[in-house]
Amino acid sequence: MAAEGRSFASLFPLDDTIVAIATPLGRSAIGVVRISGAAAEKVARTLLGGAALEPRRATICRVAVEGVSGGATAGDEAVAVFFPAPRSYTGEDVVEISTHGNPLILKGVVQRAIAAGARLARRGEFTLRAVIRGKRALVQAEAIADLIDASTPAQARLAFDQLHGTLSARLAAVDADVFDLIAKLEASLDFPDEGYHFLQEDEAATVLTRVLGAIEALLGDAARGRLLREGATVAIVGRPNVGKSSLFNALVGGDRAIVSEIPGTTRDLVTERVDVRGLCVTLVDTAGVRESSEPVEQEGVRRTARARETADLVIVVLDASRGLTGNDEALLQETGDDRRVVVWNKCDVRAGPDDPALAGNCRVSATAGTGMDDLRDAIAVALTDAEPDREAPAIANVRHIAELEGVRDALLRARALAAERAPEEFVLRDLHTARTHFDSLFGARTSADVLARIFDRFCIGK
Ligand SMILES: Nc1nc2c(ncn2[C@@H]2O[C@H](COP(=O)(O)OP(=O)(O)O)[C@@H](O)[C@H]2O)c(=O)[nH]1
Ligand SMILES: [Mg+2]
Image (cartoon, rainbow, N blue to C red; front, top):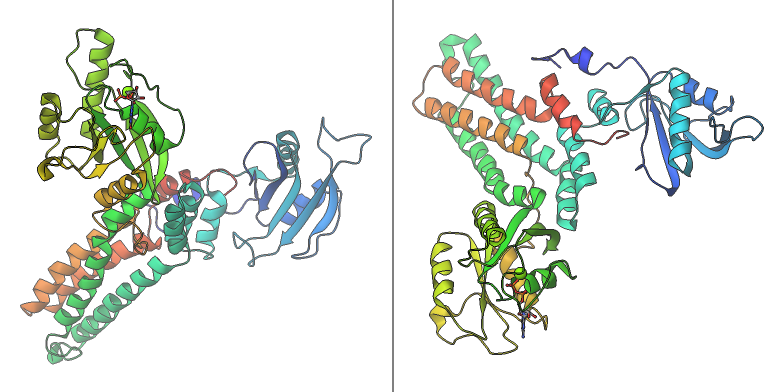
């Protein structure tokens, strides 16, 4: 890998042995310390009192931890497994030591490993080594970070698809087509008399049209992929007392926001993350929009305006028991250009107006809990412009999208040149540019700085 910014070796040394706690820091039945590198087995033996470790066999042993189980006691019970290279997570020699899941014990084991010659691993360093040793493609490594971060099943599925190479396979097929085309054009260059001899008439343009179709399909689904991966912000807005906080609580499933018959109760923004049909939604309850001379409430109204501007979707709540007021009409007008869902609340008291122009998208009762499923569907559909439960898209990561757009732009130029039968050199230049973008997508030529940023998202021990 060529590093453009800082040198790769200075950022990611590979010749030493690294150690870290692989499980979350906290109390649990079992905690795992992972050691990777040429000296992994030697370091582990030192910790475990010289017990021999057979490859891929769980060995029961004891590990003494200073201040906890040293000296007179024989040490905590542990189970160690040795995975010799290359059949391990990193592709290097790896030893995993499971102990009781107490942070003092786990930190003690790491300390002893360091004393025995290992170095504390940096964030994502195990997975980075897996990429460098050829155990994983870069997009798969990124998927591992996504999988760990996922908080809805749909997010996990998206990461899983990527991890299992669905995306890599689709991209590799496109890359292979481009590579074939390059080979044929280069061959034509080496035998100039033949002109486009190695390509049929219009073959380059035909291949490029097919390839561009595949890329456009991937990019077309990217907005939805990003939404799935990164989630969306949804702001609940409306006049005071229409039941915004009640609706917020009903969607969150708890008494998170204060509900009161006194208008102007909610003054600050209250946010909560909820799973709406697999989408990770950050729901924002806002202060009621009204004129007020009270400074705190005025600030609340200002924050509401800001929340509305930054939200991906607004839920405009109307009070069915009161019907439409002048303030409601103003709010409907203001949010007319926003992505929105209009909700008639308090339909347990009175069904909203019959006028179809005022019907709104949803009728609910926040306190009785009716209509909430329809509301969740409406939110998901409004956010995705589609049925929420469609097959998960393959591309979702901003970095991947940007590289793929680079590929598309270069191929569009190449196709235009090929169509007018420009000299091979010109077409080739754009095809090579496309492959440069593919290379950085796959990690074959990703700069050290980009790698540092990608792996910084990982937890230590991964
Ligand atoms: N009957 C009925 N009352 C509701 C409903 N939703 C909210 N309320 C009542 O309306 C009042 C204002 O509710 P709140 O959620 O604080 O409104 P906000 O000011 O818009 O946040 C409270 O007394 C709620 O109990 C509903 O669906 N039906
Ligand atoms: Mg409120």
